[in-house]
Every structure is written in C-alpha cells, then in structure tokens.
Length: 194
Image (cartoon, rainbow, N blue to C red; front, side, top):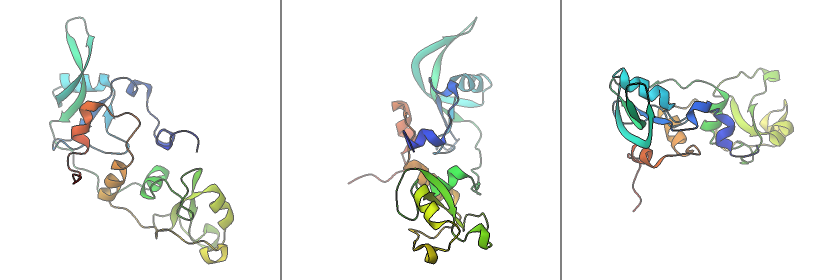
C-alpha cells in the first residue's frame, strides 16, 4: 500500500479536515477509537445548540452567525450515555484491524488483501473464523490450496474479536492528526510507563 495505511482505510469527509471535534460518551471515553469518533465542527456546534453535548475543550478559532460568535469545540461529551456495540461487524477494515494490518502468513504490512484459510472452492465460508489479512504475494501463492499444500502457516488462528479487543487494537493505530486537547481523553486509562 502506498502512503500511510491509516488514511487508506478511513475516508474522511472534507468537513473533518478542519477543526474536527472529538466525541466522548457520557463516561468521557471516545465512542470509538478506530475510526476515531469525530464530528465536523458544524455538527458539534449544532449539538451544543440542541443541548445534546457539553463542551470540554475548544479551539482558538471562532465562527459567527448573525447574532452570535462561537469558539469551535475540539472535545465534546454526550449528555446521554450511548451503550457501546457488543457485536463487531465483519468488514474488510475490521478484519485488517483485528489482524493489526499485517499479513497473517509472512507478517508484511503492505499490499493487503484477505484470504480464506479453507478456500471457498473447498467449502470454506466467509467468516471471522476462516478469513485472514494476507499480502498479495502470499494470497497468490496460496490460491485455492490448503495451508499444508501451500507450505504456509498462520501467525494466529482467526477468530471473531470482541468489541473490547477491537477498541484495544484501535488504540494502537492512532489517526494522522491528534489535536493536543484530545490526548487527555484518548489514553487516560492506559497503563503508565514506569
């Protein structure tokens, strides 16, 4: 993959490029780590006006309406708790995140695709337990063979991840831009280095 792998998988709307707001749940934890829970500044101001969020931190920049001036929020907290999803959706991105953006056969981090461990031609199904991230060369080498026939071994057996595991994986892959005002809210429960 060319460029930074993080931007390859997350397509940011243009409105998030300037002054995004980090969105925290009512317990002050991000709604999600990867992709990071961000709103465009317009949505954050709208939520403030509708009394759905509380502003925790602001950018220096302001915007004006006909009657008021607002500092742009950089961190907002939902007033009502949103229950986190327990089931992790089976998507290409979530598969790559589970496998930490590396080929499960050779460990390379570039040119990723996915592979059925038991090939579909041999009755394999598309599921968490049968699909892994693989680089193109390993995927081509394996083809519709079994692991033994292709002479390949898996780094880890594939399995369905829990929502907590996916949050932990997401924390290890921060997005390109982290505003200073967000740092206290992203990693506050991480273990401190001695």
